[in-house]
Image 1 (cartoon, rainbow, N blue to C red):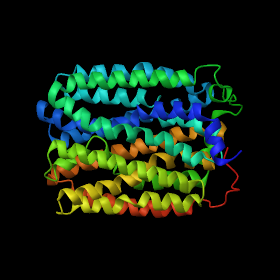
Image 2 (tube, helix red, strand yellow):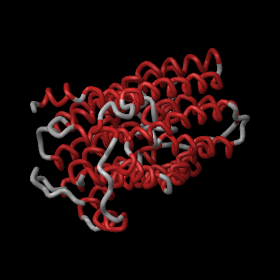
Image 3 (cartoon, rainbow, N blue to C red):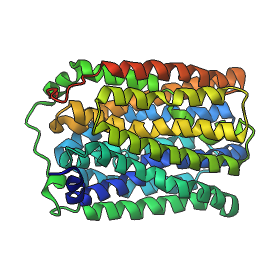
Image 4 (cartoon, rainbow, N blue to C red):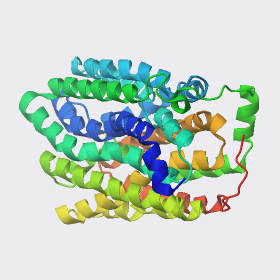
Length: 403
């Protein structure tokens, strides 16, 4: 089958995965930062205190391996159905908050947990099942969906918060996830495509599967490189708008820059996806992950003009866009489909653990210096080291997959 023919013949699972991922966790990374400055101002939370929201990712470490394993065992549709029902309830809970920071953390934890059932951890398995030659581009398409939506939704969401309030804005966002998630489920409804709804049953003992995963050098290269490159994650999630306001920008200018950042993620994803289908995986991975080092360094300096900040955020977006594709692609490239979601669940655990570590570091930095600059310089260095580590991954296309 030709490259484009594979895309054409699998348009249904591709559309389902794009719609599901597009209105789930990756989109929330953009929208959370829009709500942040308004909540901080209304409830009187400190910036250092709010930075601790990233620690909620630690609680998902327990559930992610189960989501991955159950996806391999029962299929995408069942897991996505449960997530589609539960995610909107999380936004209703957000809308009902009255100022308790503990309540806010509990809501954030719940949305992270149930949102993982409709995120790339689950939906990317449709791509691993149905694509071979165009797998990199297909992953690019589904991971571009949140950024495409964010370009329009982020400024609109900030406008609605200013004019109708953040409570109604949370409810509107919850309704969007319900409608889009339901449409995605219809595209992969039971019986519509046996390949996307009935994965082969797991024949191996779970202990043997995880022993194979943990015993591979490839897994540890991915994990350590991921940790070093993703310490910055809270900066483009809950802290993005607060960090931009620290540059002396207005909330609307910051929201507009987030749209430019989202555009960068689209460019990065398209370039990365096309390159993965054509060039050596380690080289593409290393080059894709190293890009934000310069962007974060510029943000840490005193060059606070709108042009410099916008350019720096575009550089950050280029890599963040590629990052989501790479996590799924690396697992599909080096591990067998039978344990795809099980392995990806572990990788996502590390990404969340890394994000929580970064959140704690940001909180400490803000408490000690009242500035993001020290942390920005730190992650500029760790990103460079992590990106170079990915060069140790196997280059051969004939590499025997693990598992």
